[in-house]
Length: 103
Ligand code: FES
Picture 1: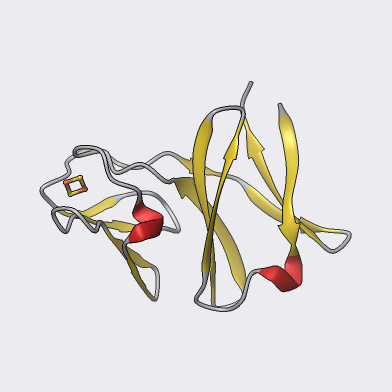
Picture 2: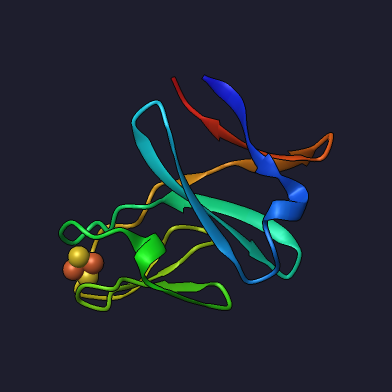
């Protein structure tokens, strides 16, 4: 699939997140200290959308059972989840935030 423009750069504020879907893949975009990151939006423990949870600096907390992930890498920081989130490459180009999702 390659790079996909998902929003304008000014639509993603510092400390904010935006959820969207690319070809059936649920993704969340975050801006932390000026940089953009993207991970899967679905918790790896059971089914919950992380965009319904809480973002504190680079840590997203699942709204269902409280698992925590580092959104800059997708790594689990705190259970009950044990599997890392998929993390996607992000870049800002020509005024848009673009996410790369493999075909
Ligand atoms: S569904 Fe996210 S911690 Fe259980």
